[in-house]
Image (tube, rainbow, N blue to C red; front, side):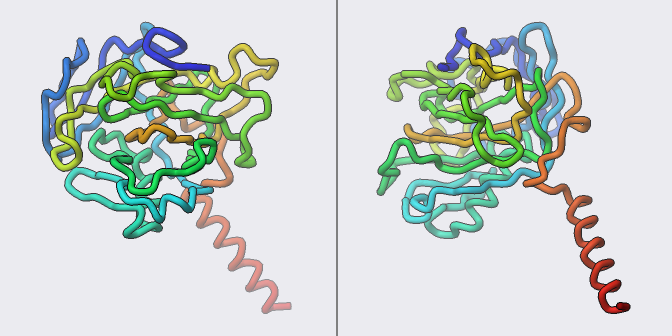
Length: 279
Protein backbone atom coordinates (compact mmCIF):
# COMPACT_ATOMS: atom_id res chain seq x y z
CA UNK A 1 0.00 0.00 0.00
CA UNK A 2 1.36 3.41 -1.00
CA UNK A 3 1.06 6.33 1.40
CA UNK A 4 1.43 9.64 -0.40
CA UNK A 5 -0.13 13.09 0.08
CA UNK A 6 -3.87 12.70 -0.39
CA UNK A 7 -3.81 8.89 -0.52
CA UNK A 8 -3.90 6.73 2.62
CA UNK A 9 -2.34 9.45 4.78
CA UNK A 10 -3.97 11.64 7.43
CA UNK A 11 -3.80 15.13 5.86
CA UNK A 12 -2.16 17.63 8.21
CA UNK A 13 -3.89 20.98 8.68
CA UNK A 14 -1.81 22.53 11.48
CA UNK A 15 1.46 21.90 13.33
CA UNK A 16 2.52 23.46 16.64
CA UNK A 17 6.17 23.70 17.66
CA UNK A 18 8.19 24.80 20.67
CA UNK A 19 11.25 26.75 19.56
CA UNK A 20 13.39 28.04 22.41
CA UNK A 21 10.40 28.08 24.74
CA UNK A 22 8.23 29.99 22.27
CA UNK A 23 5.16 28.37 20.74
CA UNK A 24 4.95 28.58 16.95
CA UNK A 25 1.64 27.69 15.31
CA UNK A 26 1.97 26.77 11.64
CA UNK A 27 -1.41 27.07 9.91
CA UNK A 28 0.07 26.53 6.45
CA UNK A 29 3.06 24.49 5.41
CA UNK A 30 6.27 26.26 4.45
CA UNK A 31 7.38 26.77 0.85
CA UNK A 32 10.89 25.52 1.58
CA UNK A 33 13.62 26.33 4.06
CA UNK A 34 12.57 29.16 6.37
CA UNK A 35 14.71 28.47 9.45
CA UNK A 36 18.26 27.08 9.58
CA UNK A 37 20.03 26.30 12.85
CA UNK A 38 21.17 23.67 15.33
CA UNK A 39 18.83 24.36 18.24
CA UNK A 40 15.96 21.96 18.99
CA UNK A 41 12.68 22.27 17.08
CA UNK A 42 10.18 20.45 19.28
CA UNK A 43 6.89 19.18 17.89
CA UNK A 44 4.01 19.83 20.30
CA UNK A 45 0.95 18.77 18.31
CA UNK A 46 -0.41 17.99 14.87
CA UNK A 47 -3.97 18.61 13.68
CA UNK A 48 -5.38 16.16 11.16
CA UNK A 49 -8.91 15.16 10.25
CA UNK A 50 -10.43 17.42 12.88
CA UNK A 51 -8.36 15.83 15.67
CA UNK A 52 -5.48 17.27 17.67
CA UNK A 53 -2.74 14.73 18.20
CA UNK A 54 -0.65 15.90 21.15
CA UNK A 55 0.34 12.62 22.83
CA UNK A 56 3.62 11.00 21.79
CA UNK A 57 4.86 7.43 22.20
CA UNK A 58 8.14 8.59 23.74
CA UNK A 59 8.99 5.75 26.07
CA UNK A 60 12.20 3.83 25.55
CA UNK A 61 12.75 2.53 22.03
CA UNK A 62 15.05 -0.24 20.93
CA UNK A 63 16.71 -0.94 17.58
CA UNK A 64 17.31 -4.59 16.69
CA UNK A 65 18.34 -6.61 13.63
CA UNK A 66 20.49 -3.81 12.24
CA UNK A 67 21.88 -4.49 8.78
CA UNK A 68 25.63 -5.09 9.36
CA UNK A 69 26.34 -3.41 6.02
CA UNK A 70 25.66 -0.06 7.73
CA UNK A 71 28.84 -0.46 9.79
CA UNK A 72 30.85 -0.45 6.56
CA UNK A 73 29.04 2.30 4.68
CA UNK A 74 30.06 5.96 4.79
CA UNK A 75 27.35 8.60 4.59
CA UNK A 76 25.07 6.96 7.18
CA UNK A 77 24.56 8.57 10.57
CA UNK A 78 22.47 10.58 12.99
CA UNK A 79 22.47 14.35 13.43
CA UNK A 80 21.31 15.67 16.80
CA UNK A 81 21.37 19.47 16.89
CA UNK A 82 25.11 20.21 16.62
CA UNK A 83 26.49 16.64 16.89
CA UNK A 84 26.84 13.84 14.37
CA UNK A 85 27.31 10.09 14.90
CA UNK A 86 28.45 8.01 11.90
CA UNK A 87 27.65 4.33 11.52
CA UNK A 88 31.10 3.43 10.18
CA UNK A 89 32.91 5.33 12.95
CA UNK A 90 31.02 4.12 16.03
CA UNK A 91 28.50 1.46 15.10
CA UNK A 92 27.16 0.88 18.64
CA UNK A 93 26.70 4.60 19.22
CA UNK A 94 24.91 4.88 15.88
CA UNK A 95 22.42 2.13 16.82
CA UNK A 96 21.72 3.87 20.15
CA UNK A 97 21.38 7.22 18.38
CA UNK A 98 18.86 5.84 15.88
CA UNK A 99 16.72 4.54 18.75
CA UNK A 100 16.97 7.93 20.47
CA UNK A 101 15.55 9.76 17.43
CA UNK A 102 12.16 8.22 18.30
CA UNK A 103 12.42 9.20 21.97
CA UNK A 104 12.10 12.97 21.54
CA UNK A 105 10.12 15.32 19.29
CA UNK A 106 13.12 17.34 18.11
CA UNK A 107 13.06 17.65 14.32
CA UNK A 108 16.80 18.31 14.34
CA UNK A 109 17.45 14.84 15.71
CA UNK A 110 17.17 12.37 12.82
CA UNK A 111 18.98 9.68 10.86
CA UNK A 112 20.51 10.44 7.47
CA UNK A 113 21.74 8.57 4.39
CA UNK A 114 23.81 10.81 2.12
CA UNK A 115 26.03 9.97 -0.87
CA UNK A 116 26.71 6.44 0.33
CA UNK A 117 30.10 5.04 -0.57
CA UNK A 118 28.86 1.46 -0.42
CA UNK A 119 25.07 1.29 -0.79
CA UNK A 120 23.10 -1.60 0.64
CA UNK A 121 23.43 -4.19 -2.10
CA UNK A 122 20.10 -5.92 -1.48
CA UNK A 123 17.09 -3.56 -1.71
CA UNK A 124 15.01 -6.19 0.09
CA UNK A 125 17.26 -6.13 3.17
CA UNK A 126 15.86 -4.03 6.02
CA UNK A 127 17.99 -1.40 7.73
CA UNK A 128 16.69 -2.25 11.21
CA UNK A 129 13.71 -3.06 13.41
CA UNK A 130 12.43 -0.21 15.56
CA UNK A 131 10.60 -1.31 18.73
CA UNK A 132 8.49 1.00 20.89
CA UNK A 133 7.96 0.35 24.61
CA UNK A 134 4.22 0.83 24.13
CA UNK A 135 2.31 -0.86 21.34
CA UNK A 136 0.14 1.15 18.94
CA UNK A 137 -3.57 0.62 19.50
CA UNK A 138 -6.18 1.00 16.80
CA UNK A 139 -6.54 4.74 16.21
CA UNK A 140 -2.92 5.62 17.01
CA UNK A 141 -0.72 7.07 14.29
CA UNK A 142 2.83 7.22 13.00
CA UNK A 143 4.45 10.53 12.08
CA UNK A 144 7.46 10.31 9.79
CA UNK A 145 9.80 13.23 9.17
CA UNK A 146 12.08 13.12 6.13
CA UNK A 147 14.57 15.74 5.01
CA UNK A 148 13.45 17.33 1.73
CA UNK A 149 10.43 14.98 1.60
CA UNK A 150 11.72 13.18 -1.48
CA UNK A 151 12.68 9.64 -0.46
CA UNK A 152 10.48 6.57 -0.14
CA UNK A 153 10.69 3.99 2.64
CA UNK A 154 8.94 0.67 3.21
CA UNK A 155 7.53 -0.35 6.57
CA UNK A 156 6.31 -3.65 8.03
CA UNK A 157 4.33 -3.96 11.28
CA UNK A 158 5.90 -6.09 14.02
CA UNK A 159 4.04 -8.21 16.55
CA UNK A 160 4.95 -8.73 20.20
CA UNK A 161 7.45 -11.43 19.19
CA UNK A 162 9.30 -9.02 16.89
CA UNK A 163 8.10 -10.87 13.78
CA UNK A 164 6.17 -9.06 11.01
CA UNK A 165 2.46 -9.85 10.90
CA UNK A 166 1.68 -12.39 8.20
CA UNK A 167 -0.74 -11.02 5.62
CA UNK A 168 -0.42 -7.39 6.77
CA UNK A 169 0.24 -4.60 4.29
CA UNK A 170 3.74 -3.57 3.36
CA UNK A 171 3.48 0.23 3.44
CA UNK A 172 5.50 2.29 0.98
CA UNK A 173 5.73 5.80 2.35
CA UNK A 174 6.28 8.14 -0.58
CA UNK A 175 5.18 5.60 -3.19
CA UNK A 176 6.85 5.67 -6.58
CA UNK A 177 8.34 9.15 -6.51
CA UNK A 178 11.08 11.02 -8.32
CA UNK A 179 13.76 11.48 -5.63
CA UNK A 180 15.15 14.48 -7.52
CA UNK A 181 12.03 16.53 -6.67
CA UNK A 182 11.81 17.80 -3.12
CA UNK A 183 8.75 17.82 -0.84
CA UNK A 184 6.51 15.89 -3.28
CA UNK A 185 6.46 12.57 -1.43
CA UNK A 186 5.51 13.94 2.00
CA UNK A 187 2.50 15.91 3.14
CA UNK A 188 3.74 18.92 5.15
CA UNK A 189 6.88 21.00 4.68
CA UNK A 190 8.03 22.37 8.05
CA UNK A 191 10.56 24.95 6.84
CA UNK A 192 13.07 23.87 9.51
CA UNK A 193 16.52 22.70 8.38
CA UNK A 194 19.74 21.64 10.07
CA UNK A 195 22.72 23.98 9.79
CA UNK A 196 25.16 21.03 9.81
CA UNK A 197 23.31 18.54 7.61
CA UNK A 198 22.24 19.83 4.18
CA UNK A 199 20.91 23.23 5.30
CA UNK A 200 19.15 23.76 1.97
CA UNK A 201 16.63 21.01 2.72
CA UNK A 202 13.85 21.34 5.31
CA UNK A 203 12.14 18.50 7.16
CA UNK A 204 8.81 17.30 5.72
CA UNK A 205 6.13 15.33 7.56
CA UNK A 206 3.61 12.60 6.76
CA UNK A 207 1.07 11.22 9.23
CA UNK A 208 -0.73 7.90 8.81
CA UNK A 209 -2.87 5.58 10.92
CA UNK A 210 -1.45 2.33 12.28
CA UNK A 211 -4.66 0.80 10.95
CA UNK A 212 -3.24 1.07 7.40
CA UNK A 213 -1.14 -2.03 8.01
CA UNK A 214 -4.38 -4.04 8.06
CA UNK A 215 -6.78 -2.11 5.81
CA UNK A 216 -8.05 -4.25 2.93
CA UNK A 217 -6.56 -7.46 4.35
CA UNK A 218 -8.23 -10.46 5.94
CA UNK A 219 -6.56 -9.57 9.26
CA UNK A 220 -8.37 -7.77 12.04
CA UNK A 221 -6.34 -4.99 13.63
CA UNK A 222 -3.46 -6.22 15.78
CA UNK A 223 -1.34 -4.05 18.14
CA UNK A 224 1.76 -2.76 16.35
CA UNK A 225 4.80 -3.12 18.60
CA UNK A 226 7.34 -1.82 16.14
CA UNK A 227 8.41 -1.35 12.54
CA UNK A 228 10.77 -3.08 10.17
CA UNK A 229 12.32 -0.24 8.19
CA UNK A 230 13.51 -0.64 4.59
CA UNK A 231 15.40 2.43 3.39
CA UNK A 232 16.04 1.83 -0.28
CA UNK A 233 16.29 5.43 -1.51
CA UNK A 234 18.55 7.09 1.09
CA UNK A 235 15.78 8.58 3.22
CA UNK A 236 16.70 10.80 6.20
CA UNK A 237 14.28 9.67 8.88
CA UNK A 238 12.69 10.38 12.20
CA UNK A 239 9.74 8.17 13.19
CA UNK A 240 7.37 9.10 16.03
CA UNK A 241 4.20 7.65 17.51
CA UNK A 242 1.29 10.09 17.96
CA UNK A 243 -2.30 9.98 19.15
CA UNK A 244 -5.15 12.10 20.48
CA UNK A 245 -5.04 9.91 23.60
CA UNK A 246 -2.27 8.84 25.94
CA UNK A 247 -0.13 5.78 25.21
CA UNK A 248 0.15 5.05 28.94
CA UNK A 249 -2.63 2.46 28.85
CA UNK A 250 -1.41 0.70 25.71
CA UNK A 251 0.11 -2.78 25.81
CA UNK A 252 3.72 -3.06 26.96
CA UNK A 253 6.36 -4.33 24.56
CA UNK A 254 8.31 -6.93 26.52
CA UNK A 255 11.20 -6.61 24.08
CA UNK A 256 11.66 -3.03 25.31
CA UNK A 257 11.45 -3.15 29.12
CA UNK A 258 10.84 0.16 30.84
CA UNK A 259 13.38 1.10 33.57
CA UNK A 260 10.86 0.04 36.22
CA UNK A 261 10.56 -3.33 34.51
CA UNK A 262 14.32 -3.72 34.46
CA UNK A 263 14.40 -2.92 38.19
CA UNK A 264 11.71 -5.50 38.84
CA UNK A 265 13.66 -8.09 36.86
CA UNK A 266 16.85 -7.30 38.75
CA UNK A 267 14.99 -7.49 42.07
CA UNK A 268 13.66 -10.93 41.13
CA UNK A 269 17.16 -12.12 40.29
CA UNK A 270 18.53 -10.78 43.59
CA UNK A 271 15.72 -12.42 45.58
CA UNK A 272 16.30 -15.72 43.77
CA UNK A 273 20.02 -15.58 44.55
CA UNK A 274 19.38 -14.81 48.21
CA UNK A 275 16.96 -17.72 48.46
CA UNK A 276 19.49 -20.00 46.82
CA UNK A 277 22.17 -18.95 49.32
CA UNK A 278 19.84 -19.53 52.26
CA UNK A 279 19.01 -22.98 50.97
